[in-house]
Image 1 (cartoon, rainbow, N blue to C red):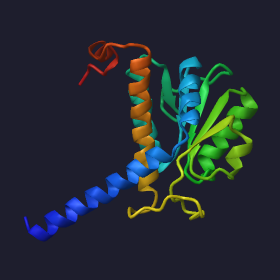
Image 2: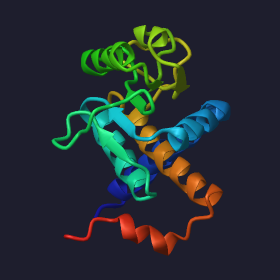
Image 3: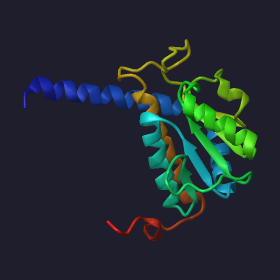
Length: 192
C-alpha cells in the first residue's frame, strides 16, 4: 500500500466523521425525544423510503425489532395493515420523493395514524401531511441555503446519519427500559 493512499484514506475518514459529528449535533433533541415517545407508544411502527434511504430505514426497522418493537417496512411481503394506533416513519431528505410522499398521503387519508417525516427539507409537501418532522439538515438535491454541505456523493451524509440516529435511539430505549443486552438475542434471527 502506498503512503499516498494511506494518507488520503485517513484524511477522508476524518472528513466523513467530522461531517457526521456536526450533523448529529445539529438535530433538535426535542424532535428525537418526541420520535422516541411515538415509537414506544405505537402498536406497530412502519417505515417507508426509497433507495439508500430505505436501506438505512430497514436497518433501523430491524434494530427496533431486536428490542421487541413490532416493526415493518412498506412493501415487505408480510406487511400487515396499518391502523390508527400505529406510527409511519417517512424517510426522505427532500420530502418530495414520489413513493414515500404517496404512502404518507394514503396513510393520512385511510387510517389517520401518526406520521413522522425524517428529512432535510422543512418546506416540502410532507409538512402538511406529517404530525412532526425530525430534521437532518444536510445537503439534498435542492441545495437549500441552510443545509450542511458534504464532501461525499449525493445524499450519503443523510443516509449515514439516518442509520446512526436509529442506532442511537435504540441504545437510548435500551437504557430507558433497562433492558439486558444479552436478553435481546431472543429477538435476533436464529435460522442463520
